[in-house]
Length: 395
Image (tube, rainbow, N blue to C red; front, side, top):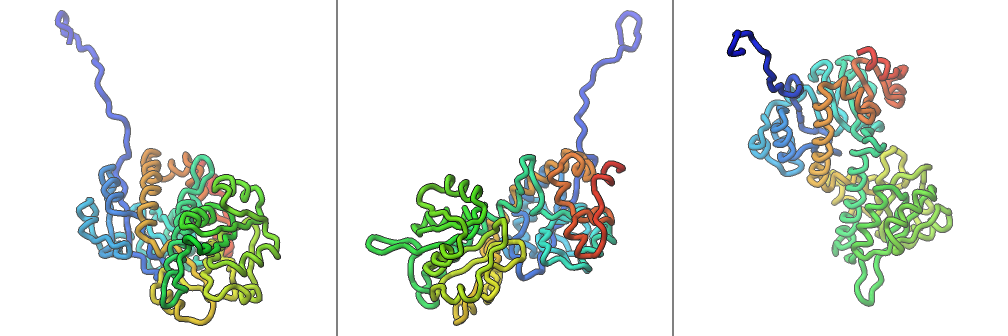
């Protein structure tokens, strides 16, 4: 107040900036799918989320596949809970598609982050998501401002590098493999690696193989993508368009073959497969569900016993799910991406605002509060796809 007339005088006061009204809870249930050994968050990432105001619930023994204990998550600030309690969080993160029985425990209107993995989605799962009004997001569809698919790209890079690490180990096995090095030594020629495709997974494969000393050939039907790859990787990479005879010759002499995504589908028929080297190590890293080597028995690298049996088998096999062979590396990479994305959601002060303000996140939604908003998912359940933009505008 003023000293002369004691009239109250308003004074400036510091006002704290607006923040999220409450901290979100994050649920980390254990993955029961034997083909998914990867886990979304490490203890270090959980600790950073807790510091930012999140509460994290993790199901008992959920991270055992990446060799982290419950105590490590507890020390980071997480709460070890039952599966049902983890599923009832505001945000549930579970990489493989959840079973309908699990979805029934998710809180109505909650957000679910998982791989859309359209080939493994079932109509019952989608219908249960719609019944529970779950906002389901396929993480491999999330884009940044430049249109890059953050999760899909990092998982593709891991797949490519894991394929060559696995191939090197299988070739060097002196009992079931050839007992040879992928890269040559003085006086001995290196192994030949044939890569189909020229995207992120293909480039990671080629870079790892050449780093070990192998001779690498890359094929793609997208010449512009192939040109970018050869410029990035250097003159040691032999790049070629997919001409049937040229590809056939490369497959016949290859010690390792790695198929990745291409613009148009590529299929290697059984006759060409039979002409490939005995003991060739073959991988299919495509995510579209179209088998590049349909005549080969598919062996999931998440299943160690299946890999052991394949090494003893006389038939040709094709290894899939390469990233699950290195689940802890995948967890560390996924953690970095989840930390960034969850931070953006909180800064938008709510899920609806985040979907409005982050177009790259909006594109990844496939069910939204009882509506199907993804065309491929709509086909699975035989429903019409609706425009999520309409609902966000009205909300």
